[in-house]
Amino acid sequence: MDKKHDRPTLGIIVKYFLLQLPGMAAFALILILVRPWMEFPAYLAWALLGIWVGKDIILFPVLWRFYDPSQHTDRFRMIGRKGVALTRLNPDGYVSVKGERWQATICEGQSSIEQGREICVEAVNGLKLTVRLCAKQ
Image (cartoon, rainbow, N blue to C red):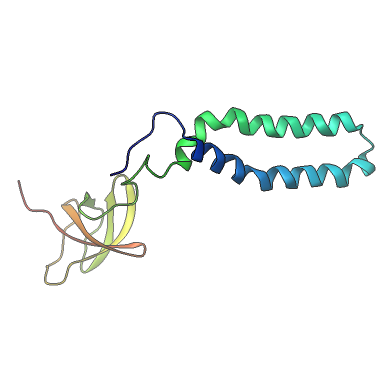
């Protein structure tokens, strides 16, 4: 059972900063290569690198949740979600699920689905959904 964290764990902190290292290294390399041509002092290069690192530190409280897989356990789960047919599905068309437009096809054995009808997602095949008409409740 996944547990959502209110605060970042040590693993999330390490993951975040390790993923920032390539960008920091590339920026430092650019500063080293450009410094002789631009003729700016070493303290300015160190200050710019410090600003780069500071940016990552300042953004961490906003971004850490995206590095924690337990925060959004159902973000990609589509099966069972309800939506609306944007076009007539006979057998293919477009639907809206959670405000996103998806290409869809109807389940085998179902007749066409008219525009505006409520649909339920049965399967996901790449970027195409297989849907059925939702039962009236």
